[in-house]
Image (cartoon, rainbow, N blue to C red; front, side):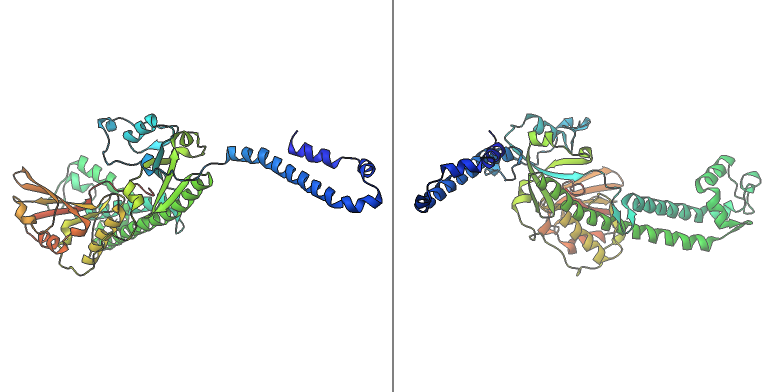
Amino acid sequence: MTNENLLQAMGRIDPKLIADAAPDADQKKGTDKTWTKWASIAACFVLILSAVIVVPMLREDEPTSQLPIDINNIIWDTDIGDSPAISIEIPLWEGWRVDSYSLYQELEKADPNQYFALHISKTFWDDFVYNGKTVAQIRQEKEDKYNLFEKLAQLLKDGDVLKYGELVYTVGTPDGEKWAKELYDERIEYYGEELLSKYIVDGEFYKAQVEEDSSNAIAEAEQLEIMDDDAYKAYHSNYLDDTEKIFSEMGFYTVVKNKKLFVFIQKEKLAKLDLADKGSYKLRLAKRRNYEHEEGDIPTYEDNVTGFALEKIECETFDHSSRFAKTDAELIDKINALIEAGQFDTDRIRISITSSAALSEDVFKDMNYETINVTRKYQTSAFAWLSVKYENINLEALKEISNMNTIKSISIYLENEVPELAG
């Protein structure tokens, strides 16, 4: 009999039977307390019986949300990297995307009782809206502006010839320049009739207008670069909150630490997890030190070093694009941002240097490097790769190297790959 049936049965007892079973009036006073005591015992019995039956039923569907006591029984990123099988396409694992073949193999062979420490990121975020525009719109506009800048920069070279129209390949320009018809047709197709008609009118080339529009296009593209960065930061913040909520409400142990989301989950539960857009997520093993360390012990650098040869120095950003800084302060900001992006995933910066002359390790003696590789691949170029710990970066030494006449380029980036989006 279920709890409901028991209670209903008790509720349908005929009051007359109770009255017939009651003692005489002169005995009632003495037995009231006894009846009350047994009624209380009966009620308690019903409550206990309900708990015994109902609570286990609830627990069957209640997911656990506790971190395993044995943290060593958790599978973390071991920094070993992928096997040569990385070259093959990584299949989906139970509908999930995984970032490496080694993780796929771990999921296949792991003991069901083991937990995985995962970063879970979105692979598609083009529809995220920032300042009234989707990321896809921002990036398309940025690409369009860069393309326009490139075309206008080239038109500054071709405009004084193209203004003569077909004369360029029939009789040539008054200055004696003559193109093959194929080259002329290729140039016309590249620029497009609409763009050319704006800057070449009645045989006159509006060069000043091209210069102004070219300058505006690159300025707008750079603003869209900033907007793209800001959109990512906004997305990352929202993503962490939203994704942490999704997995924690499903009963999994989640932690947001050092601006990263950690999800601890067994593979069988991960395989059975029902998400409508599962294929848009990517799984990546988390590093144990990310979880065990606290934010705040990452060095930052002040804007008190000036005089860099900025045109030589590229600094990679979190999304793997490389950019030149316009000011010394901006370069230092980019280095600080790069360090923040890689915190606890790696504690080293890589600096790649290209030179027109031979290089020796003595050139880099003040760079406080941990490892260095200097080589000459061509007669006209030499290369060096330095690995430097965050806390050992010597900006003064970097400035001096950038100002050497033989140094052609310097690239600064993280030693390990930066985590993808909201990992």
